[in-house]
Image 1 (cartoon, rainbow, N blue to C red):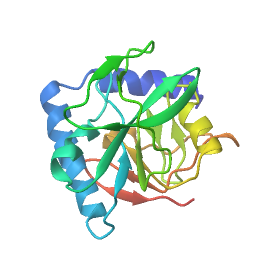
Image 2: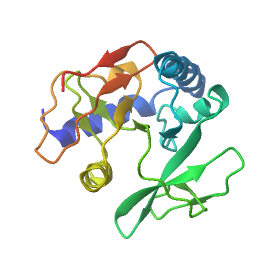
Image 3: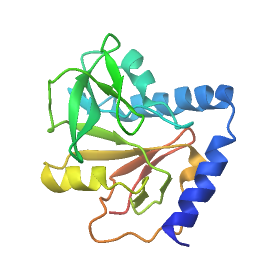
Image 4: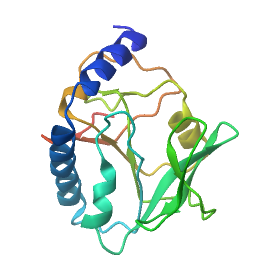
Amino acid sequence: MQKSLIRKQLKEKRNKLSNELIIKNSKIACINVLNFLKDKKPKSIGLFYPIRNEINPLLLTDLLNDVYFYLPKVKNKYMNFHEFSKDSILLKSNYGISEPFNNTINNSLDYYIIPGLAFNIKGERIGYGGGFYDKFFDLNQRSVLIGFCFDFQIIENIKSENHDIKLDYIISEKRVVKCNV
């Protein structure tokens, strides 16, 4: 199946989710992340700001102590991760995504929790088509990459390209998948 068709179908399915289900499944998926990380003691984690009915990883800021969190910020078509806390000032980007106002950048984090429209157990991902995460990890040191999604977004047929990043894990409200990278 073509990426454009997969994007369309999964956006439509995700847009039909109720706020209650999004909140419930986001909490469960964040607890799955918490359990996954409990022995690993990360010092820094890159998150994403959820848009258009995406699963919400920001709940992790309430669950994990002694961890610095970062959100992506795009400038001149390149992405960097900027420090984020519950008190951070966020501004809407040209893409309509809330981004941190501060300038504290750290692109060498312990873990990155990554959004997407579709994932498979091989660690392949379909994003929104901008290539920001692919470019970012091409230019920066690779850490542990975790796809974070609703379980219905884990599908079988994804055709990746050479420049597409591969994930190490996928975490949803139903499971933690160690990818066959």
